[in-house]
Length: 272
Length: 264
Image (cartoon, rainbow over all chains, first blue to last red; front, side):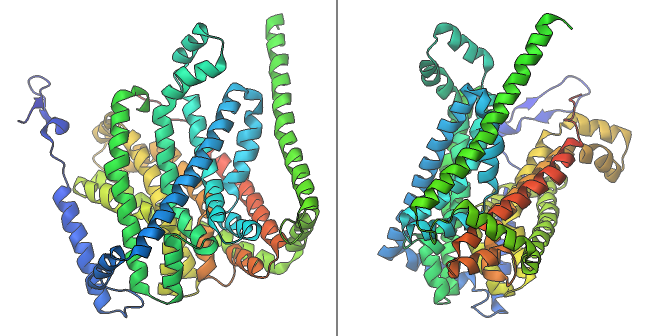
């Protein structure tokens, strides 16, 4: 049933989009998406497959990828690399950000020295240094991705701590002097939406860089598969792997992270 | 001055002094830890600060390094300009043609955002070979989602009341855009440039690994292949210096040019 917002006589009546559930542009989006696929197919007909394989060549390869056991193994390894590096980067950043929050005297050291250095140090640099330090293994990949994610996590956690509801924090301080108790019972629960937003940002960046680290410094993961396909000049396979990664990241973001984000938004007004 | 004021001022200056002591102390501690680490570990794996600073000094007087740095810096600048134009254009499209909203925000943006940077780097080198076009294409593709997200956020913040006010003063869309929308969007454009600049130095150097013969990314790759970890370290630290110089000398003053828009 369509409801509308009436503003009195002589005013326009605005339909409430959320209640009617319609969304302009959905059809256009589908039409344009199909059109893009057709353009890709058309362009591929005029170009050699080593430059641009057609969707008709790539999609069967995706099905083939899913039928091989090694694909599941390498996908699981990439997921593990992403999860481990996010956990490390997040835990380290949370400890540093909370310390800097309670000890303002170290904030300049943390944000204007440590974070500035980490933000500007190249991911490729970390990857190559890690290869020389630790060799070609999982630890190299996790280290390179974690150290790339740390400044992103630190900056976001800093913002979340600065935007905490000061009245709630003050109230907590009036109930107890124990900082650890306040942190555990008030500050961390208040930070939940921001923590989630930080994890979401880290996840996006992690997928962007994990393949680079795996390609140069790992012996497993989707980056390793990319490296193998590139060495054998299997361009359609490269396209198939990229399509799978894009679909995986897109679907996870839309159907898992976005759903959690909306739930948190409902429960925590602070998320805005 | 009241006694309480002077007390407050001296407490503040003591706090600032302590903050600086901790900040600079962190650098000293890091340098000492680095030096101690280099005494324990072999120099081919962990060169000391002395060796690395020497390598930095050699790089600074080497004309080849100037060529590598100039190539990387100019590619980054060109890629940021392209990313701002394409990302900004895509972000603005749904504003003027709402029908494209779902396509841009729910198809183009997430796909661009989730495409791995190494994917762009490989595709760029396949399509354009070893060339400036390849590097600039890859860097632009990596930066576009970052500029899109920031400019979209900025556009979302501009309230309909302000737009309505602009429309009530003029029917000319370009005039309304240049005199009302653009000045309100400016801080977000600066943020988009700042983020792109950071990401360009940090992540998009990967473009130079496959698609370039000169550039700092290429230099890092060559040094790693030749097992010259001192040069890898030195180039990475030079990148940190270039990043900080650009941030302090260009981007920070640019960001100070505006004041946050006041809500009407």
